View: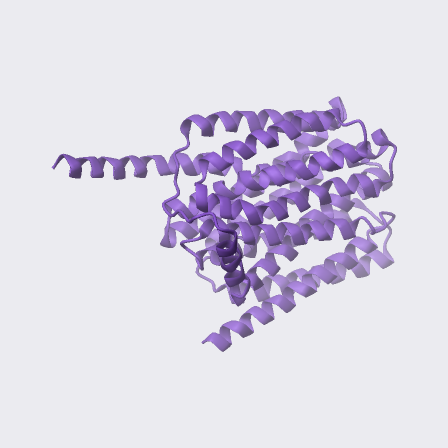
Length: 406
């Protein structure tokens, strides 16, 4: 009898704590984007500070994305083997150290190396926190809460550039990293004391088994097409982050604060797209994706044509970007939640591989973006058209695979 009472008590405690755990996870997940977007308004200032070409300053995003993408492959395996909390705390401590050292960098090479370390650490920070969602919820509630996770992740691009713009204007590029440092320390402490361990499934840490698990996921056609689609969508955000500051600040002569406000609108558009998706859950992803990408392609082509016949202006850069990010935000969370749901007993690995491939693909896009000329909006417009056209191709392939399955 006493044993039965203890079991009931444990279940009740878990039911109460799962919302606290989810709340903490929702505040941690934005760190991955926060570490990019908060200093994007400072990219021109970093270029001047170190006296280097703008492409080297832009590579600070690429190096971060590379560390974030590659480390997630291991982060998922570690999370499935050792749980969520302990790996998170170790990685967050490393992230805090790297963030503290970045403002002290004596050269752009040191900054690049520390950004690689920072990205690698944040991978192990966010993977366990994303997996908390899969640990605690299932069925319709899981899909509802996954949209909250997307909205939380979207908060980084909304508020970070505006904060970063003000910090850059008044205190210099280093201040953005000090802000990030304080945020990280606060949530390290909160999770240390308040976050329960949520993982119910543990897998022995065997490299061969993990590789087989990843192989199974990579061969899952609907999983991998969802990865490709989200990779392309996230590339739109990264492309604007890499090229936008130099077009808007250097060529159009707006201040970092004004660029921060523009980026805030871009993040808000992405957020509102995800929020709109809550009311479109009942519509099949197939129909949503075709409609969304067709509209985005139309907008990008019209914008490119206008770029050839009209002088460069902030409205011609920003308005189409806002519309496309809003539309992209509608389908992004569906692809992620659906992909992870295919592997309910290895959610850490499925989560990590999905995120890894998305960030690696976006990192490659950021590296390629360093070759885009920042003199006019035309190269950016061509890149937009190419990315969205590829999204449509992946959508048709995904839909074809579903029809073959049926």
